[in-house]
Length: 375
Image (cartoon, rainbow, N blue to C red; front, side, top):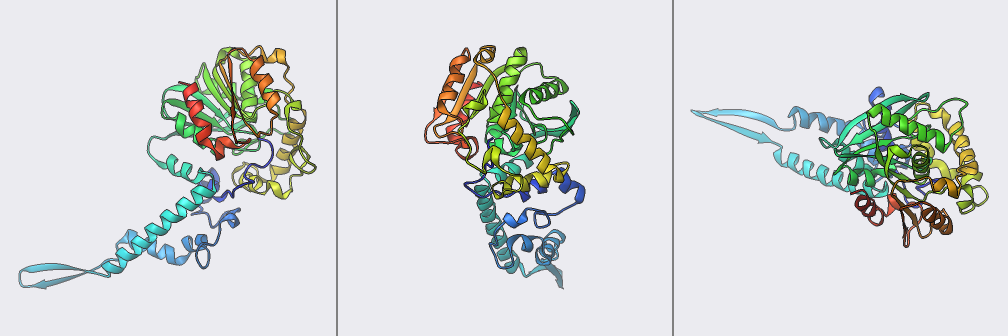
């Protein structure tokens, strides 16, 4: 992923905190108490989030759960007993309003988060998520999640991103596959290693270590941007561990990038406003929120200097490969075409009308091709 990736629509990083380990450790309820909640709009007077975490909602919650909103009066007349439900009309009206409001808010938040809020809801359904765990691999604490059953697929997010950005591919593939989705080294909930530079080869070793940890001998790989670069490194160095490979918006050399403008991408600073959304999410879920400037610096260095694979390196890839990119991608189309030509048994697909962020923002043009290729 090259640069901040929620620059076209707003994103709600507070929800990530709500479902994060930090939320469970702190006992936080809802999003109103977390950093980043200022991204949430004031949809009702006083602010939606402050209302949901305020005394009125808590009173309503206690009343509903404790059956106090329905005060029963027992009246005995002769041999007859009747129950009188007091304030039932107001109760039903209040519940209808609450349900309508909740549904509207959910739809709004899901739309503005590019479906990520819906992904959190999907994860709550029984059987969708198998594990949310950590593994000690190559000097880091690597966070990963697994979903579904079937042949294994490793789903890898882009640079500066996190598991949630791959939710369209995860939910689609989990119907027929055992999906493993990690936060890459130093990204999201996975820790960094002091003094160790980021590289695609190192992160490829991390993924092989994760496969070993899970007892997976061979897996298909789906990688977006940097995730695809990691997949390429795995297919070159560990050909017997990779079944099929899918890349979207990936590059085999730094010369394949569309040059960044001054102050953007590799030329940006960690405090740049363009990073605000990513920075806020990182600081909400990272093991060390104050590590952001270090992580940003390592990432910019890697983007400026890596990868440097050659055409001969690409010829070592034996895995059947689907090479995808957007028509207006941040990777030059000629570069993408050279990569597909250099890989034996590769298929090229340029997604018309889309850019680097189609796996998240236009999944209907990307995900079906991935699902079909991995059948």
